[in-house]
Image 1 (tube, chains in turn green, brown):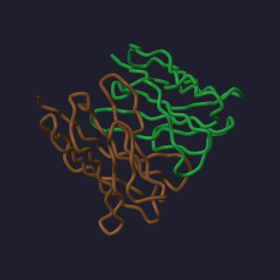
Image 2 (cartoon, one colour):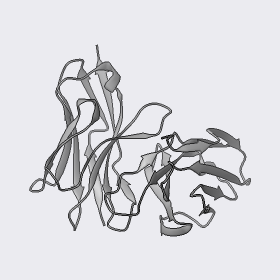
Image 3 (tube, rainbow over the protein chains, first blue to last red):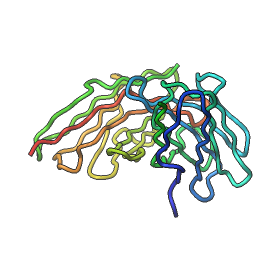
Image 4 (cartoon, rainbow over the protein chains, first blue to last red):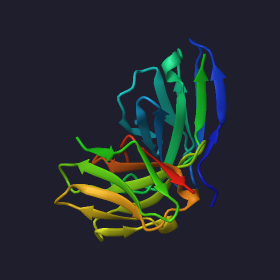
Length: 114
Length: 113
């Protein structure tokens, strides 16, 4: 099976712009989670989707949003970019939403905000 | 709330030496615990996970971890380090609310020749 894919891999934006990142889960997986990784804050949970419904949300401002499509592909959007949004954004997929379910991570999208 | 603490942001070992990366968890319910590895410019790869089936968990690449409830620990070990083990390692606990993972701060492992 193909792994989790994320596009684009690298992105450069300027402050105030918005950005959309895409994630395609492993075939058959219905749950997609997003994480932000920065040197200062480490890995932080953004949100989780299952069957097109947001199941869980982390402690991020409303500028961060996401959605999931009927084919389980997911997108996250960040509006009004700030310098602090520069990070590696990781997507993970799993087959179910159950505690202990293994999550498989994609390679990430590295976002640089200038 | 569940949390994990990784002791030591950097660990350096010689090739062939024992690798020990420490992780302590805090959880009000029986936890699910994970170790992931991240190589430069890559995503996270699962090494192993604890789901209460056995306290000693064997993972990929010769790594294993032992769950010790009395010490609230889940330390990662490998008997003999290889140069290819140089990477950053993350311990994580699964939140009781679905799939959310709470990660430790990570430990960068350096392997000296």
